[in-house]
Every structure is written in structure tokens, then in C-alpha cells.
Length: 313
Image (cartoon, rainbow, N blue to C red):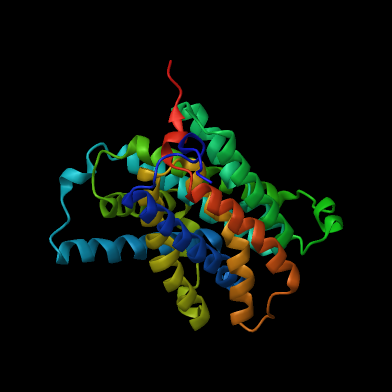
């Protein structure tokens, strides 16, 4: 049986395939942020933690670019662009760690899975990009699987979800994260991805220092435990520099909703990480929920980008 090319789109280009691989890696790194971040959230102020990861991330990347002679001031024309993107990620990270102090993992993960739909809606408003019903079907199937995993196969747990202050704050952060994927293609000026990443991390650090210097200065940095510093290193190198770069790369070749669709994998990765950390291995309901996640992602993977075209005026 020959599948219609109109339905499934054209064959994915090499860059599109790499874009999907980048977002698969992204989902794993983000899962680490939840698992490891939950352990240290009560031990350090979220603003100070976010400022530190931005500062150290920008410093490490800047030194690397200097050493490889790839730092050029010409990449940073119209610096306001990076401050917009940096502010978006500042909002996301701060609200995430504020939420992790009080919000259950179920509620947080549930809100996180709203990101693909938010990205799709924002992409329509900003770029007038219309996704096919086939892609929305893939997103919906993935969402069902993710919610099944999040709520442990319990409809009662789903209906018991209460939206408190922590959930509301994280919803704002998730909305900001979705906006990042939509705005990156609009605000980049063909500079290399590493230049965009440096601009975003440096701008985020500057914003935090200007707005929250008293909180940052009064943090007892010398009294932080080794676990906090190790987690901070992970968040800086992998969950900040890594995810910034991966999203920036993928957003160049994939529609925003497809980029954010990989957030459906995050709860699944979280469960696996929790098992590796000794917090218990997945129960059968995880495998049941994992199946529609893979089906939804497969539909998105085999649907080429021509299905997602800007609407002509």
C-alpha cells in the first residue's frame, strides 16, 4: 500500500532529521532538570540559582568561543533581540523552580505537556503558520499518552488536578518557553547557533543581576552543599547551554509545535531517571502510556514540513 505524499508530506531532509534528534535529546535534558532540580529546590533561592546557571553558562561559552576564535561582535547586532529571548528563559526557569518548591510532580508535568499546543497557537498568531489536522492528531495522541503516564493511569487523579499559585506560575513559565521556539526564527539574523546561545545566556544573567541583585548578593554561596553545586553544573552545561542550542537549532528546521511536541517525552524520561536514582522503577501504566507517545511522535516524524505552511494573505 502506497501512502499519499499529500498526507504524509515530503521525505524529511537531513536537517529536519537532525532537528528531531536534537529535540529528543532536549526532552531528556529537561527531564534531568525536573529530577535533579527537585532535590535542590528548597536549598537555594530560585532567582539566585537561575542567575548562577546563566552567568556560568555565558562565561563557559564565551571562553570556549574565544579559544576557538569564533567570537565575533558582528554576531550581536541589535542586542535587544537577545534580551527578549533571555527574558523569556528567565521567566521559565524561575517559575519552574518556584513551582518545584510546592507543586507536585503530577501537576507540574501536566502543565508542561501543554507546551506544544501553546506553541502551535502562538505560531499561528505570529507566523500565520497553519498545521494540518494530521499533525494536530499526532500532538493529541502524544498528549493522551503523556497524561496517562503523569496521572498513573488514573482518571480520578486527572479530575483531582487543582490549579494553585505554583501551578499558575509554572503555566506562565511554560507559555514563555513555548514563545521562545516561536520567536527564535523571527529574531535570529543568521548568526551561528552558538552565538544565539551566548547572547541569550548573557542577556539573562544581566537581566537577573539588574532586577534581583539584593537577593543574589545575600545568598550564602559558601554554605551550599556539594549536591547543589553538582546540580548547578548539570543545569548550566546541559540543561541551559545544551537546551538553548538544541531548541535554537531545531526551531530553524521544524515548525514550533513540532519542536515543542517532544515535551511529551519528558514525563517518560522523568520516570526512568527516578528509577535510576533509586526512587523506584516504572510500573506497567508507564509502558501503556509510552505507546501512544511513540505513536504520536512517529506521526510527527514522518510528516514533512510542507504540511505546515504560512497562510497566504
